[in-house]
Length: 246
Image 1 (cartoon, rainbow, N blue to C red):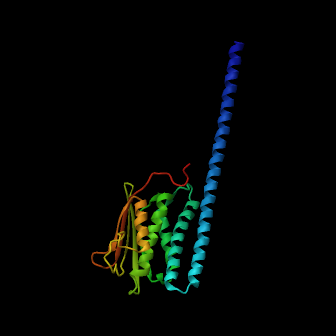
Image 2: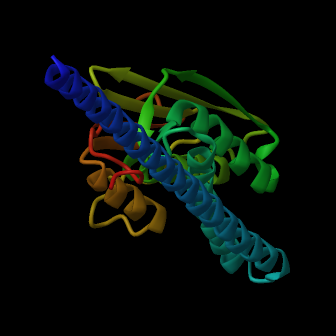
Image 3: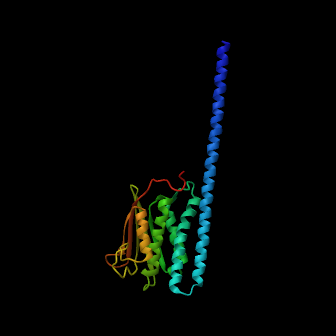
């Protein structure tokens, strides 16, 4: 009987030691995860701040630039950097640090473009957006594409109009994202297919490269009735881990 009691005590003690060890290990894992999340938040915050400094310097240079063509190029570069900074700001504010609500980011991005371009006050925007989560590997190229299309519409579509409208539609069906951006401007003066070897615009070349990066398809040109332009893109949501993957 004493041996049985002694064995029972030893078993209870070993169980308590094991439970204590598990609690310590769990605490260490939680602390490690917390440190990783803090580090990721700091990285996204610093990247966003650095991009903001760069875009600010480019914008200041554009104000001082007397050559109109160079000024436009500086503004274009400013907007591209701001579109990337916007993604890092969203990641910094998120809890996962890997995925963002891209539908919310689109409205913020377009407002940034409107605020940056002086002649954008006459343009109204409307949205029809499904909730869509994208990881950073897809959010950045998609954001840059939206920037190129919206900037192109604002700068070229409404030259002979006192006002205009840009409509953005974003939908998600079975992880297939459809993005449609339309305006009621002048449409395209030429019939050169976007992304073709004959298209020399940097913005169009960027769109072509970024859609390939998304493994998607797109079409960009005038509406059939020539009442404006339309951009349509489709791509599958990737389940590949984003920036928080180890």
